[in-house]
Image 1 (cartoon, rainbow, N blue to C red):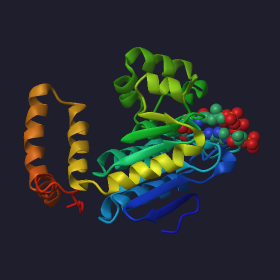
Image 2: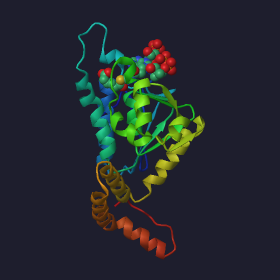
Image 3: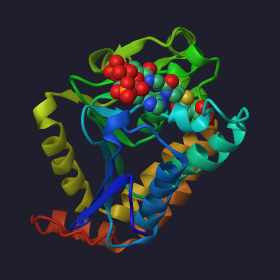
Image 4: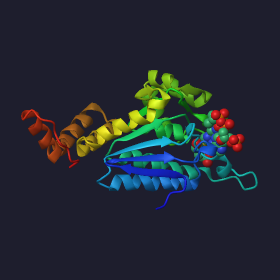
Length: 262
Ligand code: T3D
């Protein structure tokens, strides 16, 4: 599928998806949401892709839903639940269900649905110029795109409530201190650092990383007993991979492992 609103670049095992509507701060129209869904599904099904990096063109990561498309002045009030179901929910599912690492490289403001899309990524790096904004309350909406799921788990209930109800811009450094993201880096180092991390991950045991992700996903709804059993079952699958055999053999032979993602 040719893309109009995103860039999709594969270099080796790494795909970089860049939101590319900088004039409107990379806000999502329906067509861009469909392109992001298509790109993520392509990454999930292509075995040559072993890590994904998501970022934004220009000064913003993304301002969330394009409000001029969602509620044009001269049209009837839109079916907003349809937009949530058809634009954003498939994107969040695609990120969480893809058994490969997804890095969010947040280059500037991430607002509304895009803030929560960033938080759904496996590892979030943010520029020191970035910020996270639960903008929904300013327009009478509630956090969507997994916001009410991830925010309390990442930042705690009190901070999640305040972020959702006050809609204040949370600077990257604050997001880091609240446990919402992994690292803050100088603006000019964001993409080089994110690429380096993605390249590293693309050369690791991809199946094993995918199983780590599955186990962590399941932990969000499990008690300890259930999770111990999940670990036992997924460890059996991890141990059966070629990469596990290679990792242990290389360790014993005192050489660097060569992982093939199988
Ligand atoms: O359908 C549904 O609504 C359901 C789905 C909901 C999911 C959501 O994501 S709801 C939340 C939607 N997003 C927002 O409410 C954020 C709106 N934007 C802002 O609050 C601010 O733009 C920012 C805080 C993100 C950035 O502020 P600032 O001062 O750096 O930039 P700006 O001047 O406000 O924006 C620059 C341009 O982008 C401007 O256009 P102009 O004046 O240069 O022609 C602005 O209108 C445009 N823009 C920014 N955000 C959006 C947008 N255009 C359309 N939709 C946007 N969300």
